[in-house]
Image (cartoon, rainbow, N blue to C red; front, side):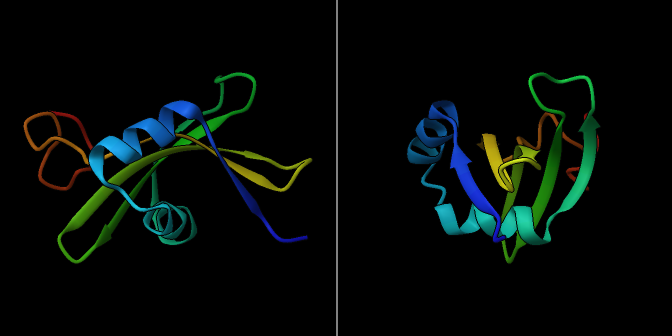
Length: 92
């Protein structure tokens, strides 16, 4: 079964405001680096994914629903260099 994607209203709103393409988010989930895991999140454990492509850097918060084979995109943003170290993996 192929993995599908579901975007929360919050994620879609932020993507629209920040001009972040759906394709970039899918690429982030497919090939990005998991930099934090949140096993206690409910209703599903989630993770923070770091993705870079050229000058573009994204953080994607996603949860995987194994029963539905669906990636649920919770939030998407470009990390603020004032809040994140240069590697964009750790907060200042």
